[in-house]
Length: 242
Ligand code: FPP
Image 1 (cartoon, rainbow, N blue to C red):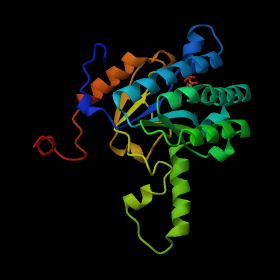
Image 2 (image 1 turned 180 degrees about the vertical axis):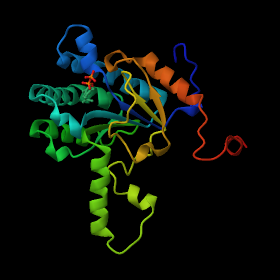
Image 3 (image 1 turned 90 degrees about the horizontal axis):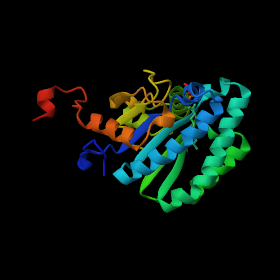
Image 4 (image 1 turned 120 degrees about the vertical axis):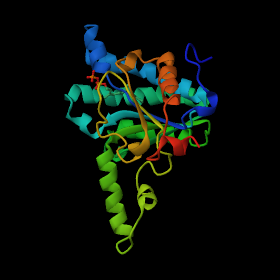
């Protein structure tokens, strides 16, 4: 079932987060407009979402639109927003069939109303699904989330001292476990303002494959690689292997 990579089904990450990078370069390398790379990228979103659900991953977070992406040319921003609406509308049936819950992190109130409304409908319609949660990071950045949490905290706890657990409760990711595995496609070796707090002990997997070409087998390879690492959380190798 897991192709040429023998995945240990007892060690599947609970939460995988992905920086889907390389759509533009994929399109350029084929002499096509960047926007077609994003459209192709949606096919990968579908394949990777279904594969994660099949493998028993409980949370899949996809970096679909960052706070900084507003700085792209207006036509590309508009195309991405339209693609997001269309994808949510078109995939809703599939999400229901696969029992997948849709959620979002980020300042979604600033999205164009059409995108916002589709998203809210998708979230509402899928809220009782419980096989896997697909979290779309939209108008999201890790620093935005931390500052947003700090503002809410300052309001609620003017006189108390807080610990890390209290702080996490104010992040938009409060209800999700931290990702064990963060994948970035297309050869860039950066976190780019994604899940800054949550990535504290994540394993990183970088691949040169561009997002539109990142298929089922590529995900198996990433999980296989993850399963062969030693996660020490600041302890020694001897302590973890006791
Ligand atoms: C990065 O490639 C990709 C994005 C900024 C957008 C990804 C969004 C989608 C695939 C649509 C997803 C929609 C839903 C509803 C999940 P890039 O443009 O930065 O590529 P480049 O680095 O080669 O220019």
